[in-house]
Image (cartoon, rainbow, N blue to C red; front, side):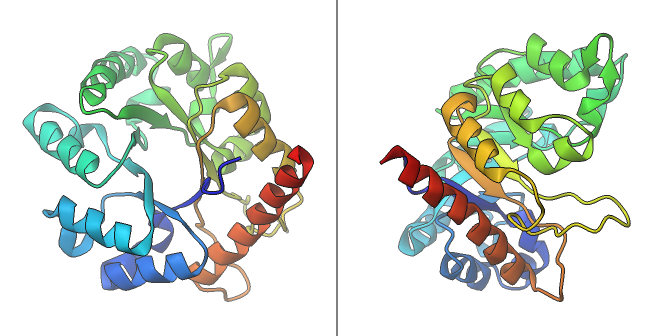
Length: 262
């Protein structure tokens, strides 16, 4: 098992990133992360991809992926952005959401655009992906919007499963790995709590079977990166402290899996 399978979505620390981009990356590295997933914030490097790549290399931080809306991938603007993503070392370009995904009249237009952009992104040596929220798991026909999108897009389109939102919607996250084996290249690890729910949003303290999830993601789903995204911060923990606590929970799971393989 590759040691570097855990990343962090920088949306988790968006306010810190805006205040001190470089210092926040150092803090995340010190918290144990070996990779980051970008979400539109690049600090002073927003027009200097090679400078950002050098800074990341000096910290020994990989880029597990970037989130980019479809408007950022279209036309000449898209060409420029894709070159930027390639230059910083990204291999996955993930569409974080689109309002057409749960609209009966419009989902096919989204699918057509995703299929077109899948080929475009491939020309830059990267893979396009789509990220779910809860609404993708609403009933559509005999299945869900998520199933419809997955079944009608190019199989080269990666699926980024957000476990927090899938579980929140009542979907079986582990079943998604089985259903779309080899296609879930990246998985967002998150605890999304319902209002008034007495459950810790820290991974490993919430009662969920993360062991089986990670095991199935690696062995069946095709997951290369497990990306921790922290949106709830309990017990007066700072975003960095909460992320470090969730990472410690996943590290225990990965250690157990390694021991099982020995």
